[in-house]
Amino acid sequence: MSLDADQAMDRRRLKRRLTVWRITAVVAVVVAVVAAVGRFGVGANHVARLVVGGIILDDPWRDDALAEIAEDDNAKALIVRIDSPGGTMVGGEALYTGLRAVAGKKPVVAVMGGTATSAAYMTALGADHILARAGSVTGSIGVILQTADITGLLEKLGIKPEAIKSRPLKAQPNPLEPLTPKGREAARVVVLDLFELFVDMVEERRNLPRDKVLALADGRIFTGRQAVANGLVDALGGEADARRWLAETHAIATSLPVKDVEIEHEGALWRDLIGGLLGKVLFSERLRLDGPISLWHPSLW
Image (cartoon, rainbow, N blue to C red; front, side, top):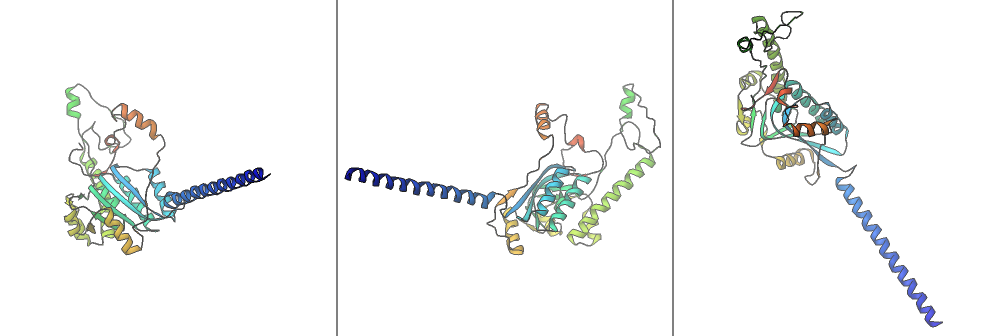
């Protein structure tokens, strides 16, 4: 009887120990999950980061992502890292507008990398605070519409293009016919109107006199140091300096994690696969720059 009682007591003690270990394990898992969710999961406070690189084009999926950031109460601020020579006017304007919408709800800081010119500088104007490295290249405020007259070459090849147009200025300019004086003037008016739009943005966002903006907006580029001296950029620095500015001016702790903005494009997978196989011949970003552009890059053409 005594042996049976001892065995029963041992079994009960063993069960209690197993129960304690199971509860401890469950609690540990729950704590780990809560910690992970608190740091990275849904409902966690964070600083959003948008990377803008390459040629800037109009992108409705990017616009949707920015709209979500604006409405996300857990995204306490947005850092925009820019390394781009620019792009289309519409692309730059759309990105600027999206950033201003976010800035209406939370602070936005732009951090320039190696290059942030033309439409990329327009993008930076959408931020509340702009930082650049001393060696960053920025500026190039302006608009360009390029074409080429290849009619002489076609004539040597025995090719004569024909076009039936509703009016003389239809499809002016285009490479298959000489640019007429009226066509040149019509194109110039469009370029100057877009240029005025760019100048308006700089004047408003940088709080500079218009005559100074016009003096700076002759298409030249600036280093980061020159841009600060001319009022085009607020200060020199990088992302760490952006976090300090957010902490000092908006009480956003530097300890908050950074969450990169993910932009999912429809059909991106098959495009990347085919583009990789064909050397991006079919989907060259340069070939998609149709219309007025705001872009600076020495080796683009």
